[in-house]
Length: 608
Ligand SMILES: Nc1ncnc2c1ncn2[C@@H]1O[C@H](COP(=O)(O)OP(=O)(O)OP(=O)(O)O)[C@@H](O)[C@H]1O
Image (cartoon, rainbow, N blue to C red):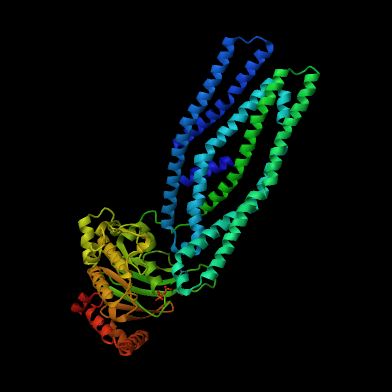
């Protein structure tokens, strides 16, 4: 099991750190130096009982024993840092490999994971493996080396008695195997319960605003109590269920000691054994048993580590989106959908989200995607970014199938601005530079200026060096949006995918965001999901989706004259706006705001 674990650990990190291997050899040396004083003690006792010991020889033995102790300490001092640095470096590599692998997984995979379970795999499971490498392996090998050496020494002194010392071991090992079996179920339960507890706590913390808003503390609290109660019971079971069998393991090991006393007395009486030999056996058998018990106990941890490793490997060996061996370079920035079919669930009878969609998104033009809720607009745009692969048909960029371009290369061509803006904990500047690592401060500020974000960033306590909370919680929705637009401007990719995200912000912020987006759209292939049709009425073409199908396409005026779904949606939105205008004493606000807002990429209007 240990060998398998070590090899899986090497596979996990993809390296074999030489420091770790050297450190383990030093740990074995440490175990041997721990055992070495005992044979010296035996030799000393033999001479004492034979009456041949002299003060000088006794001093010699004493010094030799002291040297063994010093060597043991020295080996530990050299080995331990080597093991630690090797183990931490390897686990660092493993974390990077996992993070890199996660980046390549289809987004659908994340949707199927429970947040807490995934975070448990990436934190506590990985920490368990790290602990195994850093704290356990060295102690384990030195813990095995010591009794192995002593048993060999006992065999050399008296084979009969050594066999008696080892008499209980086969039965003890059976008890240990049984203990492992008994612990298997509680172990699995404990891992599941702690993942569930992490999920529940995460959900509780993330959803605290909603829980508070709906006054549902009682119910959620009860659910939390149930999950945490199960976690408590599972933890208890993992300790208590195997405990009697572990005790049996210890008892059976030490049965050898009772046998040793009985057999020793017998052979002493019949004159086939000498007293000093028996004395040495009685002294040495105890550390051998103690060490074997410790090693047996630690194998319980190996079980957990094996399970944790299996769970981490489950992530690492999850199939990634296939990458081309020879990535092709797109010849232009026009996008073609060719009979695209896509479903989130790849199983018989699963709902088809896009069904036979064929269309052309022209290079350097603005294409708007509109349609009722759940029509498949976001899905279509996500497919362009290859967050998923299509089930049938193809999407081609510059004449090349996205699957032949390679994800990294594709992402160099594409910038995305979506509704859920994710900002990372770090400074505003660092968040901007996500668009272009290594961009100068001047360029980042220029991008922020063009994204209408400069003024509010400057007003922050440390301006561009202000630390943002995780997720950018300290900023408003509109401010987060503008940072994400600045990020995309800085990236300066030729294709821009954006989810018109102004529905939830106030009219003045909406106007600012529209201006920023208009700036961003200049001279690029832009695909925008539009919820407010008025914002994209100047688009070069509008694709109308309904229930996963492309039902209409054309310019605003073409679509209006067609009298189909688009014109109905337009009429409904106009009606809603008129209704809003007439309903309150603030009638003039939307009208004024609307007049103040530039429609998305108004500069195109000039061309029309
Ligand atoms: N990750 C997902 N897993 C499974 N189903 C999904 C997922 N994302 C979206 N869907 C489903 O796919 C369908 C299309 O969703 P999509 O988000 O593309 O629609 P949309 O037109 O952008 O809607 P809206 O305008 O309301 O944002 C919906 O029925 C939705 O429930």
